[in-house]
Image (cartoon, rainbow, N blue to C red; front, side):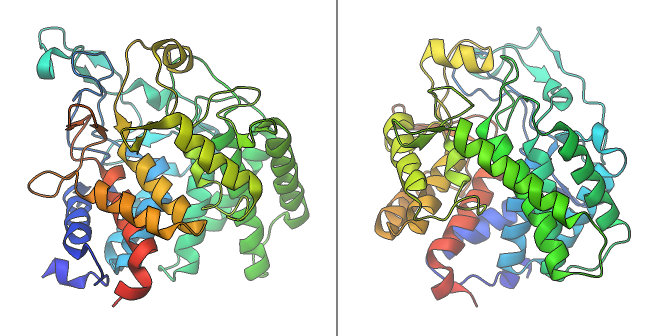
Length: 391
């Protein structure tokens, strides 16, 4: 029985297994690719226009997916995902896309189907996703982190992986100062997103660590150390608001972003750093809604300025899992477990989670089932209860 391979045997095991089964169900067997969701255009706001096609594979999911599969004992699935990743990103790093089709397709043109009214009158209904053409520097960090994790976890070696990684680092060295559309794929113009720069730091850090652990590999160790230091210095200078003791969504902005909660998780700063503690508190204060987290400020004017679209959206479930992780890392494990218990309780009658949740109406929103939400559930359960529940 496939589910019996799950190594986790702690609290909420049924929810963890259900999430792993969902990830398996979202996997395209011939290639190992895992789609973000099985649906298109289920709305983030009923009657609104934030309706996207999620039937593709996002690179941003790569490290978290790989970590969840490996930690839960699913080596074969982790290897298939790693191999899909390698095939998709092979080639010129300048041509790296943030997402691909199930078989690695690169062309995913977005168009609308005006003859369909959409779920609950939420139109337009979209096929394809124009975000495929965006620059998102954070995906370079995700890919570098994934390949580093795969190497250190003992997945079978693949030829030319290190050559690919060094090519990605050469690209980042020349382009890391560019503004981009960021993790949330905003359509309101490029910015100097702090999360994107943090993930550039992750890429350089993982490259440095790999060379330190594997001196037989060739690479620009001194140059990558310098890059890592330069990025770290710039983020701390330009992406941090000392008056409010918090990192911000982008350089010079006052907006916050739930992705900032990943700063301690990726190792950019230690969990006990006062700037990390201040950021967690600020994000909770400004982005909390009904006990859950929005991904960024969602007053109409602020949201439209950030992502170029009218209307609002629900709380973002994976962001709330990230908050639980951050609380646990900073010693607030009781709060973290209480939040996790609430999040696990939001699943429907067959244990599935969508992308977002409306705490006022008490209903799920967005595409469904959402891989990112289920990955969050698995990783947070392992972090909170793993010592007691790893078999």
